[in-house]
Image (cartoon, rainbow, N blue to C red):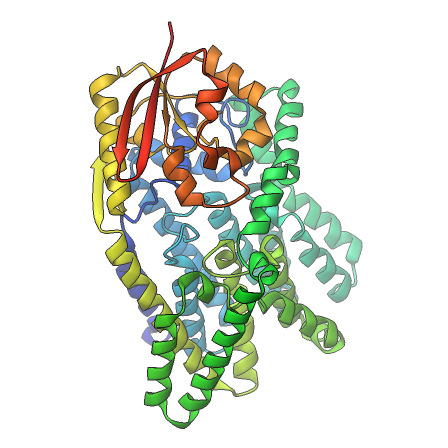
Length: 540
């Protein structure tokens, strides 16, 4: 019995230790505060989409709201919720890997996933993620693939029903997974004789969670006349100019457009290959060269090294399609890996959203290497990821060293962010009343959580993409009609944080002065190093 559970037990212990090391690394400026703010709005009776700005799924936020209702709204509660989901995800990876490789390599696969995805030092992690919709959807997706493979292998209809229902939850949670039903549909047509029966069963089971999500929204107060506005937000979230520009600037895409950056990546790979060749001859010297190489490569370059993964897998699928189809489990794994990376196909890396697409790719390559008995490469990859993650953790440890805590919201952050937070929170507590509404521009909402001040839930996230989606006329109307008394403009700091051409409005830092010059006047300025944070008050 002990032999059967020893690997999951090791994973569990490793995971708990890792989580406590990672605890409190709550990202105060970017998307993470939104993941507490939306459930807070739901608990206050606000209607998602109609009164709370959101273009992700609804179910994860209602789950979070229920969790906060029971355990209280705090970063500790949020941490605990994500720990539960992360453990669920990790064991899903372990059991899925065990369908392809033995327990030792299943454990190795799981450790890879922890290093690159769960404990990623960017906001694209599982503990304090940029989106719980993404992480919850991924957990459902992994188990959906697991049960689909078991269904094909064992011909047990129960597994097919579970897999279909879980995939429905996945798609309802995050629209990036909209094409993943192709996995089930293609599998039905390839491996089942009674195709129509299973197709109907799949559609019925798949639709359970999307319909349940709509039911919750209508019970909470959403009406049919609200749907055109909501649909317009979803459509604009993918078609807006700012969104298109943003995706051109993140991940691998810009490296392909910049010859110098591409040359750097090629040189990095030459260095890694050379260190691997040396590693095969002498493990000590190979390890030393690898460590030296990683120390001199910038973090974002390392993250972009693996952009070729989807392309490699796609080409392998095309070239070996006849052989792969004869191996249903392997075919489903490859197709699942490709469909996971749809959003990040051309800029897959583990310092951006591509981190969420890595688990199935990692499993695919380990299964491939084990099948071909190339375990030397796996041991070298372990060394590579372990060195990189240790290096990244050291950077994070020294950079995120200040712990700030107010109103059960705790964040471990940088010196500059800590000064910024303390000054803004102090000013709000000393100069505003509990019932006065404050707009944080563009999206630095952590001070609102730390002071428990109200705002407009449709305007908590006003970077260029949201401004492009909502429109300046709509924003002006909301600000002037919803009793916003103060506007705190942190755009000078946010422009440094984003540092992208697509965020022109935020980078200019004059949005409030130009759009509300007759309605708000500047009453205070907070100077943090080189950043001037302006505070505006509504003219009565």
